[in-house]
Structures are given as C-alpha cells and as structure tokens.
Length: 319
Image (cartoon, rainbow, N blue to C red):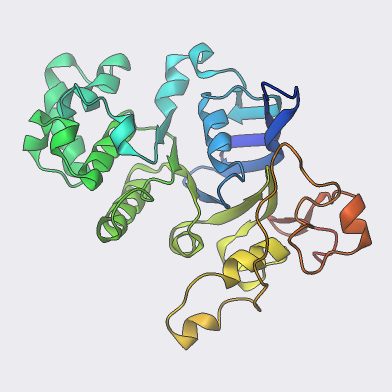
C-alpha cells in the first residue's frame, strides 16, 4: 500500500515573548497515512491536533523531525512548496465563516483553485463549479450567492467543494463539523465519506469526538500534550485500548443503551486538566491525571512501543 503522508518525530515549538521559554505544541510524534485511508487524530483542546494539521499543510514550519508526502520532503513552509504539491494536499477548516472570502461569490471562490492549477480549460470552469456544487449537495444557483447569504452548513459545503476541486490525494479535515448545528453534522459527515470512497482520497480527520471516529476512521491516534499516546486500527482500538488516557476518553463517551455500555472499557475516572505545554511534567506527561501512576511514571518518559500490528502505545505498563 502506497504511503501518502509520513511523519517521523516532528515537533513544533513556539517561543514565548516574556520568559524565553517554549510552548511545546507538538513534541515529537510519528505516524503515517496510506492511500485511501482515514486516520482520526483525537484529543482534548490544547493537545496539538490542529498544530499537527498546520505543519502538514505548511502553515507552520516544523521545529524538527521529518515530514514527507508520497516520498518527497515537505518540511518546508507552504510558500516554498510547488504548485503540484499544493494541488495534491488540501484542508477544510473548522469555521467556514472565516475560511471563505465574504466579498467573493461562491462561484468565484470555488473557481480560484481551478484557475490556479489549470484543472479544466477556462471555458469549462463554470460547468465544473456547478458539478462540484452538485457533488456536495448544493443547487446550481449557489454559484451566484455570497457566503453571508448561506447557512453555516452550506458555507462548509462550499469550503469542501473548493478543497476537492483539485482532486487531492490528501484532505486534512480540522474539526469540519464542530462549529455546525447537530442537525447538519451527520449530513456533512456522510457526504465526506461518500466523497472519500468516490475520489479515492486519504483523510487526516481531526476531532474530539470519539464516537464519530468509530464509524468513519480506519485508524485512530490519541494525542495528549503534544505526543501520541496510542494509535491503533479501529477494531483493535475500541476492543483492546491500552493507554489509561485512551480508556479515560472512551469511558466518558455518553451512551443511551445498555448494549452500548458493553463495548466501552472499564471506567477510568476523568480528573484534572491538561497541563500547560510550557511546563510539561517530568516523566510521563499524563501521570498528573493517571490513576495508575507509580514511581517510574514520575521520573522517566515512556517510549512508544508497538504491542501488536500497527498498534502503538506510549506507556510504561501498556502490556
């Protein structure tokens, strides 16, 4: 299977203005995405999920490590990347209200990448825009509307149409439904998964919704304070979670039926808050919230180990 994206020990440190110290937003993570695969990146706010996405897209330069796309180095910032690379990697942001130019009509917004990357001849651009709108479930007349005339869900559909206009190999989705009404979230998720199968794209899907990942991801990576704590194929992830943080997140998923409770791990109580990425605890960075922490956890940071095929855990006692 062809590897689309590969990250090895990538880091992103932001210097603070007053203290001369660093915010370690992403602190050495490794993962890969193969063709036609959906990888979910899950964690609490402040865990480094969006920073990871922005490094992949070149919006943040990396502070260290290696980052490659289809075998080519992409550690450089976006402005130094070639057009072919920009065409093959697209992103959908969380808030369509800020990612779409309010002074341009929808048709012009979607047409821009078609023109920049010469996707179709100029005389076919309008027809292609209408086809893209149809692919995301919007009527042709949307082409003449400004973003302010659209609802939040419709604006996000326009952002998705723009992203898929270049037929990318990798689509980064940064919490694409979290700013939308619940009534439209399911519609957009179903549409995204249909597009993924139809166009053969790979997804890096960033979210805090564990139950959503169960239905759409092939693999899930759990981030905490800049590190990946656990990563596993979807079946193994839910049936055999090994990291206490993973178990804590899973056991906090709200359920309605008794049958749903049976698939969740034994409850690990959620306590405390994620520490500051400026003052990362010594040893295991999760030990301040872990009910199982012992002496070694306070002193030595655990290494990431593969405990079964494609299932890695960063914990001293995962076995």
